[in-house]
Structure formats: structure tokens, C-alpha cells
Length: 282
Image (cartoon, rainbow, N blue to C red; front, side, top):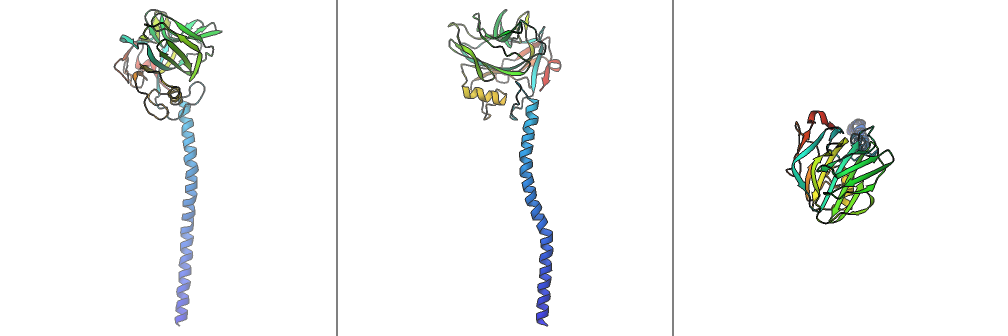
């Protein structure tokens, strides 16, 4: 009788084990499957997020990385819209100017697209298009105009960088130097009065974003690569700021006609333009 009881007990234990296996095994298997699925899903989701974000911030025909988060930009009509600063900005003889620009579709021949301007006729930072054949990018600290040939005009977003170290001026488009190093005279400081204008007839026709100036700083090639990779002046690859950022107009916090300087105290004021009409989302 004891033996039968033991067998029954063993039988019950086997049944219980079977039940546990039936119940637990799918759970364990499901957990493993979910883990594997989650692993794939996370990778795919990250990839999808990268694609989604980069599509929103697509520039120069390439997808910018997901680290680019600043989504607003300043659009100008090329006729009478611009912004100005209350007093002339003086960057001395050593600086870096970095900006993103996109020319409007149907841009005119012989058009000067002035990103930052000074005085009545001085381009501080400007691409210039000639008759659909020849193009230039210009830089004029005060009176001396320097330029290099750049013919790749289109309606994509481009990053435009100028570095000046004393008398040496270098031009960069999309993280690559254009032309040769130019020489400007000693004593001509980098001066800025306007954004999107240099005189009564030269206005920017297109969109601007991430305009940044570092006074007394010539950024390194690695820092420039970081700027091109992230799309922002405050996120250089590893999200570390480039020290010495003097002025930074990223158009994220504009109000009415005010364009705040996110790095300094030199706010710009829109002329013939407003936040509601001219500040757009990527």
C-alpha cells in the first residue's frame, strides 16, 4: 500500500511538472523571443528615428544626424526683408563665422545672397551668383573684398564657414575649403551691421539658420566637422560647446520681430519681417 502511495505521489509530481513546463516554457520562450525581437526592434527603431529626424533636417541633399534638434530657420524674400543690430559688431582680426543657408528656388542671376553685411556695400559673408555660370563666395572685413570661385549653386542647404587668423582668410562650404587662402590687410576688423542685407538693393533670397560667430577663435577642422555633423553651433559631435562662442542666432526663440542672441547680448531686429511670417520649421 505504501508503494502505491509513493507511485501516486510520483505520478502527481510528474503531472505537476508537466503542467509547470506547459505553462512556464512558453513564457520563457516568449521572453527569449521578445528579447530577441526587442533587440531587433530597438535597432530598427533607432534607425527609423534617425531617418525620420534626418529627413526633417535634410541639408545639402544629405541626411543630418538625429542629434540635430534645432528646427526653426529664417526665410527672407530677397526684396526688403532683413534684420539689423542696434550697433555695429566688431570682431577684430581673428574670428570664425559659421552659418547654414538655402537659396530660394528661381534665384536670380547676378544675385548677391548676403548672410551678414556691413555698411552700404560691404559683404561680410555672402555667396554671389553670376548669370548661371560663375559663382563666388565673398568676404569683406571693412573695405577689402576677398572672394573665391564656387559654382555649385543650388537650392540645397549648405554650411558656410569663414575663418580669419590675422591676415589669412579661408572659405569653407560643407566642411571643405573652397579656393586658396586669401590675405586681407592688417587693421581691417570684421564688422557686421545686418543679417540678410548689405545695402538697399542687396538682400538675401532664401533661408538662413544657425548663424554663429566666435571672436578671437579659429575653430579646428575637427570642430568644423562636428558642426557639419550636428548642424548646430552648440553641439560639436560630442555635444560640447566650442568655447568662445560670441554670437549665436539660431531662430529658436524669436518673438514678434526679435531674433535673440543665444550666446551674447546682440539681438537682431527683423525689418519688414515677423516671427509669424518669416520663422519656419524644418
